[in-house]
Length: 182
Image (cartoon, rainbow, N blue to C red; front, side, top):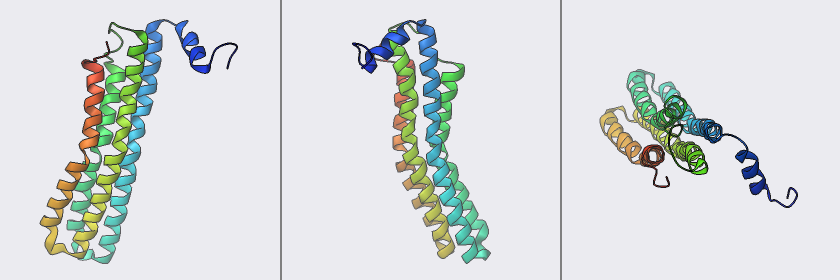
């Protein structure tokens, strides 16, 4: 408690002394930084895939091209949630729809930050898809004759895993361009 106020009241009163546009820009900056946290997922996933790919090549060097292809395709899919987050961050940075929007400063500011928070959901798909890519590379190293079946199963699994990242992107875009709270 700060005087007779709790911390939330104190923060709201403190922020209320600034121009609304400055509060919205500040919360947008927070949203940008938070959105980029989603890069953790693809980083972990791709690292796992690369490690499994290297392990598979070490066990079956004659099939290194096939193993590397599976690992790289799977890693590229794992990167999509990081790309989604980057898109949201770049929109907030260079084409921020909240800057010229009309409505409550608090709704606009919270929505800008919520766009970034939503994108954190991309950690899951990025990690999971990288895990699938690594296991795909490992499987091709063990059973190279099954490469096309392994690739198909890996890509289908990765597509399903991506849905939560797509949901996060949709929520962020709705907040930006069709916000029901404004």
